Amino acid sequence: MSRMLGLVLALLVALAGGAPALAQLHAHPDENGTPVVRSLESLRDLDYQSWQLVAYREGPPGGPLRLRVVGYPGKVRLDHPTALRVRSGRGRWELADRTLENPKLAADGRAAAAEFDLAPLLADLHQDRPLRLQLPGVFVELPVPPFVVAEWRSLATSP
Image (cartoon, rainbow, N blue to C red; front, side):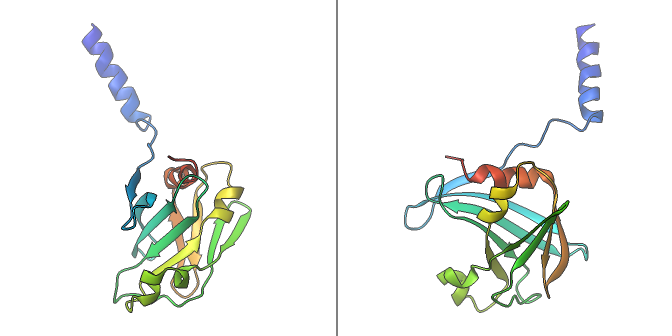
């Protein structure tokens, strides 16, 4: 009887959508030994183009928060500075382009990545709501699901 109960519970969990997504943050030191905590996700825009989103914090909690958007080299060329537009419900943000402040990205001739200041967005978000990103001239809309927003929000305080 208890085995049958276990199967019924497993089925109910599966039908209900499973367990909530857990943050997939990775901590590691950079080449200078500075601690880095990051969230890495691959998402598709509405034109079904793949993009890699890397949200990260360098240093201890309270350090700068950045969002790196990476496209396929040779398929896209990102011009700088271009602000990243973000929407969620009635909320609207423009994240400043910080790409040229990163020596590695500034020197990369492929120009397939851009980096933005994530702190103003995260300071205003109080829920893990879905986001819609727009990078003028690159993609019209890139949906970001709530579990990714939860990972980004946890970056600020993760050890």
